[in-house]
Length: 198
Image (cartoon, rainbow, N blue to C red; front, side, top):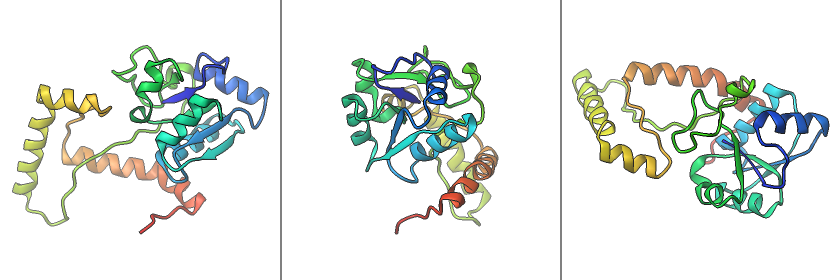
């Protein structure tokens, strides 16, 4: 989601973009660190809207949210899990969801697309993979058991309580998702020369 400090006059992502266009290199955007989804999401937002902002990289989402609450910087592309207390307490304001649909956890916050901003979506997803060559029967059994678990009301509620939305699907859908996400993120990762630390 896109968060702002309460002192920022923008009540929507579209208004934040307008402010940033009117005053290049402001507001300052903090994020969880170089190479994180929050950083890459910030870069996608910059490219999609043509804004110029100053970025402040932190060593994790929690320190970034702490400084957003303190007003050290004005805006952030953040995951929900880092900020529920700050949002609920009114210490930061969520103004846009960079995803195809609104979050169940924040149903009143519109998506970026609803605000006329496209090409800036960033979703953090988790999945289960097995080694190539795993017998099809084992893959099918794992898939069926995972899908059954994700459709279980208690499991779904537990996942939602830690800011995860269960999305059961097939191995083919996962394969297609990885391929489409690779097309989005690989060029940006190459541009920045980002590598995994071992």
